[in-house]
Image (cartoon, rainbow, N blue to C red; front, side):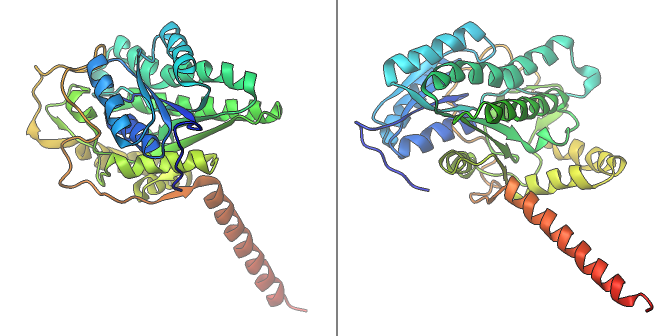
Length: 340
């Protein structure tokens, strides 16, 4: 997968949600390969630190692009600034997200609106901003960062789950349209597992105990590698981590009532840590939380440093062929047993 570009021929990538967590890991991974990087997020201080980190990793140039992904005019301006200062944007990665840990009964309509604006419309805004110049040039790649929760809703994260479902629907519609147009623009989606990012230290929470990712938990850097690999290989959809494969597979194959009960039993308790939650701490739903947050959160002692990923289309094809072959064999056996 490794590619290395020099300063003169360095391509340009723009990453949203790039000041911390997975977005920052993705930006840093492209920087290691010598890409010029545009980083979009709301916090100018943390964004400047992330840009400097990209340069230290090998990027010939990295610039902060301060914008809220929910703000369409701001996203338009950020995309134009990236093109003006860095050059033609070859790759755009939509990674920004927001969530609220809360049962539905405790959520407000405003909280649903805000999570949807960031996690769903933020990816729509990024895509629209990237598509305009990409269409004019007839090339480019847009990568959506999804989640296994795009296939199966998780209790206590109804707003986030719904937004990821919406992102997947938008991605599939856009991809079909581009194919119908014979466009060379590639769009893909990477479905992520639970990761050790700072979101659990700044997301709005209405639980009595500290929120945590449902194990197994992975470090964000190997997950970022999967995103970059999906860009280089022009993959349509990638499922990252065994847990994602199991959850998506269960959502596709198991009876709905059975998986509902499984999620009720495991999904609720799995997101609650042992320590009590401090309800006075600030959250980032409406404004960024100040502080020096990096790619990782507080679960480093249990987070896995390796993760495998699978091309979803290859897996679907293999499963389909296996089922077809099994059906053929059973049919032949049944035919041989018929009395003559």
